[in-house]
Image 1: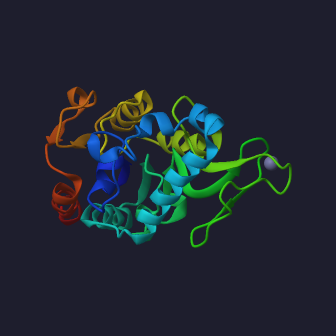
Image 2: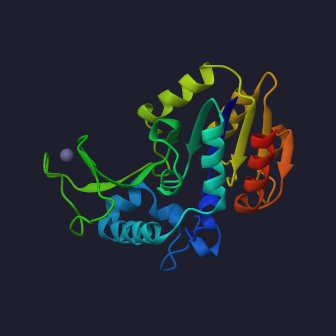
Length: 234
Ligand SMILES: [Zn+2]
């Protein structure tokens, strides 16, 4: 069986990681959609780092939920499996998904990256000084995530393209995302074209809904364990 799973913030929300949308996403009355931008970093890098440090700490303290566990179970069951997540946290990895079966298209919050050259490091259990400077070129370092208005990294796109070129999926699950990025919809449609079942798990309708064979209007942590059990036992 060939399976593609696409996830978004809704999957981590039940682990206590706030989404960018709605009032829970606000931080010190600031809109995350404005903080997660190159412009915000250019004008106030200290503020942006404070926000990311709080997010990092929240993620360190969080635990994977039933949705992460169900996806990890499905990964074990499928012959070919790819998870594409928009989440920058490490909850999928901590639920047991192997690195080679997963792509974090919006980056990894624990990576600190030079804003000028390509120098980077990962800091899962420690933190750099307030505003870290690159040891190679002295420029300011930034969180290794894809901000609004930035391109996806080619390194992350390649494994997705390869997986999509490898044949049609039997099952495509899109969970916990409002599918506002066109590429999520494109990948889901491409992967299921030619007979695969496209399942959307999201409490609300999204731009993807019209293309899905099955709509499950529930939170991912409620719906996914049931859906995965049905697939694994069939
Ligand atoms: Zn540098």
